[in-house]
Length: 373
Ligand SMILES: Nc1ncnc2c1ncn2[C@@H]1O[C@H](COP(=O)(O)OP(=O)(O)OP(=O)(O)O)[C@@H](O)[C@H]1O
Ligand SMILES: [Mg+2]
Image (tube, rainbow, N blue to C red):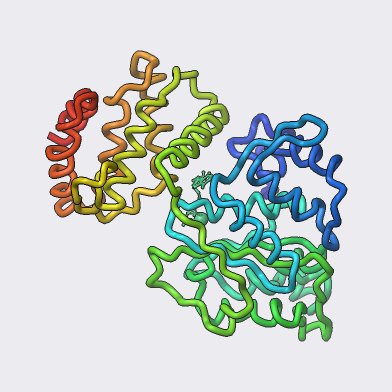
């Protein structure tokens, strides 16, 4: 955005950005992969499908470069997702909130096209122009419809470049607007009747859409559109260890990006928060002995990440610099109790029946009682 009165200092390194894009943050890994990658690449792809999966799951390259894992989960899922993008079918990432759909979509497009920014954010207000094209009205009035007055959508730009376009929250978009994607996906062309022309997709063009299967209730995907997508369902982390690993990794990255003062290993609190979330989510204690009621919130991995990050900030700035139960208790409560009446009952039951009985959890029990009463 270059508004006239915008400050003139524009940051030119990703160091100063609050959240660099994947292709900026991981530029080194991407170029290292590009250097060793000698497998066949689909047209316009910057990496081979093998290298794209390696970028997402991490690994050590033949030249010794260590690629950090971005996604933790079944390799096969990512292989299916990446293989889909090399065909003429688009990719739909589906899952409950916080299962890394947006995250995977960003990293896939960064690895495949070198840019994750051709993005349409789906909302109930998304108009057709966001998927097709719009007009610069001043120029439209001055010159009439012309190439110069046309404002391409991210999808149109991706078609021209042979890149990946991303559509976030596809099912929030009104159905008639969603349908604008049908021609694009089946004919690989975008007609511009006002100019008597069309934009034909260059090889390499494809679409990654994400949709949430929990807070659906909005617009379903028409079956005509659904048929043009291969759906990959991203699961919740399979085990407690896996989820602890994801949370630890992301908290570390976020803490570094936010330049939070270092807080010594918070492994115990991370595990506790993850256990509480998993138990309440599944309605069963980890030992499988006690049935529990589940609260109304989703208690996703993403929420566990922000609970811990929040705790780290509290402990670094207001605590003794060590992550303690008291630093996370407030945020855990905030995540669990979304409905002040029903969820509070569920939480109190859990606290008294489970948390209280655990020998080494007394500090956590006390901290939760202090916030919740
Ligand atoms: N399996 C996983 N591997 C790595 N990171 C994960 C995983 N699951 C969740 N995360 C982390 O959770 C955070 C949230 O993910 P993201 O925003 O992509 O979720 P989402 O599925 O798009 O959720 P929503 O439906 O709310 O849009 C990200 O920081 C991501 O790193
Ligand atoms: Mg998302």
